[in-house]
Image (cartoon, rainbow, N blue to C red; front, side):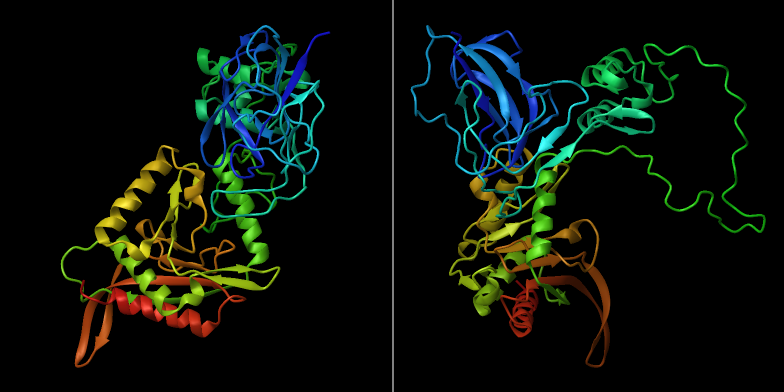
Length: 463
């Protein structure tokens, strides 16, 4: 009797509910040895190479590059080679597993095909004998803070947009390769454009924007089209702008499935919105007394530390279910880092122990690790308060999102030169807009105002 093992996608990092296939290192029919690289998966925190849990022949693989696989869903199936090295029963595979809900079906499971649904849920699992799935985990983690998982299942299928049927992952690949989906010759069931169709079109250049549209495999040649009507003007006869289409016209863009960092960011923002009672105070820090060139981020960090010492209530965690709060004696600041993939918030540990040079060195290290995706998952959680320096791009004031369990976030806007009144006249001062959003369940308006005042006072110092 053939000994088959089904490998379910393990939790690749602190309760992450799913991961995206980046590249398979094997194909169906290949032989692989224990702990050889099986596949690379992108999570919200890193690109992880998943090793093979057995030695044997590859029978099935779940999905292709770009597909989202739910934690606990089938990742691969093997025919075990009894003469090759195998992992002993109960031996750690190097990834986390746990108990909870039964996993859901994902791309590449029992009935593979271009039209199959991509199912995403918040569950986890592990390898099992004969394809029977074990109990799965129900915890969760995220790039921008701790968050509980749900049992909701989200299903996405190949949908027709602009007359073209394709999975969201296929549409994303087409955008990445500069391929016009409407010009791609579809070979999938029911006229669905597949990954291979897009790759083939990109290779031969047949679907570049502006090319002639491709005919379906079985479609007859179309009759010559009638002359196109003259384009309508967007101005009325009186020269005023007018609406050329009724409101509510169906969007012509192509839906894109959120993956990795953006997928988790969406979950965390929704979770924060449902749990926090946010209130925002704004004011302007006067930097007129600054001497010489100074590191703005380092000064912001120093000001936050000073404010945390003056008003500890905002350097805290709050448990909304049990109505308890934890005041922290140290200051770990979550520094929001914007990337093309989404928002990362690494923690600047022990900011209250660092001088200006130490702050700059630590932030530089965190940014580098975020950019090359080498940052450890432990560095993306556990901060006690947050900072968003959005003013380096644009904007004066904001209402930054407080991510539980923290109770406050500081937003720094774009510096400006403002006319201010002084005794005996007016002067032009350089000023920095500050926005302080806090969870009003955990601290009072007076505490928040005193915190902001302490920041303003520290930032007003010459050095």
